[in-house]
Image (cartoon, rainbow, N blue to C red; front, side, top):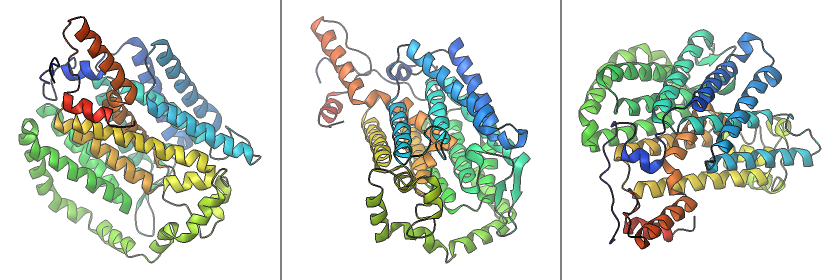
Length: 448
């Protein structure tokens, strides 16, 4: 397109104030406010993980700290006059509609059964979306959360007598059950491997070791969904390794190391491999598949507006625990269609933004694939969990997706094109990194 200059974008791993960062507006230096939010996040997520162990009453002491931290972050964001991410507005809307459903049922809103977790979700999402705007802060957050998972497993991990699967005692939040732990370990493990592709050789070894420990924790949970999500993430990682010249050597070394370590690893995990095979063959699997039967359509019709409430959904329905392991169905049954369909619209919106990001030319291909891998793993976690969007790993995924796809929102595109036209009319140099003519045509052709 005549008059449009597209800058040559440096490869990933360059100086934090690269042209990629200028275009995305995400590489700001960590200011005092960001440091305060970062400290509050570390404090909140740590207290949430060890709430039962330290003996503090969750609804009051820890819940108050998390909620106040989220409110502080919201205030910081408003004072900075920056636009709130669209995921924040969706989370607020879903939370408000879930409370409305409970209120229409005659139950207590906000502090009612199952509703406090929504406050935690919105608060952590606010903090992570704010922190992940900065590249250095994103690395620290990822390393901290990965280390926290490892520490929680070491201090609270026990094995069930049945299949010997890993579960946690004395831990709460996103570490409350084996499946949640599996998704958390898997997502952070793959995220560390992607980070290693853009790190120095010394740090790369540390990241590989931490990723291996998290995978070991994942396998100990004997979670079928967690392993499936991990396999999807690794598949996208391999595509990134084999397609990006800048990371090909380090990635090949990583693949060789994984291959060599798989033999002793298979010996150490032999008992759990056998247990996993037994779980796959369980006849009780049909109980989960019952969710996708015709009777579910009647349940969805009955909860088209107002849900049944958490206590009813967990114990009563057309079949035992009818909405188990599916966030959309669980939200629909529990809090009604008014909340569930907004949740689904949110996922579709993020998916459309990712498609736009993949068509643009401003990001390295490896970063695009990282966003796709993280979003895909997060979708698996939500498709196979009751409230998967509230896991700390999926909240991290949402913040990461917001970081790289926010420029591809409809309003942001319109604002950049308006500035482009102003620059052309005043004979000024067009903005660096604007979409090409092909991209603009794609943007105008979309209704989002």
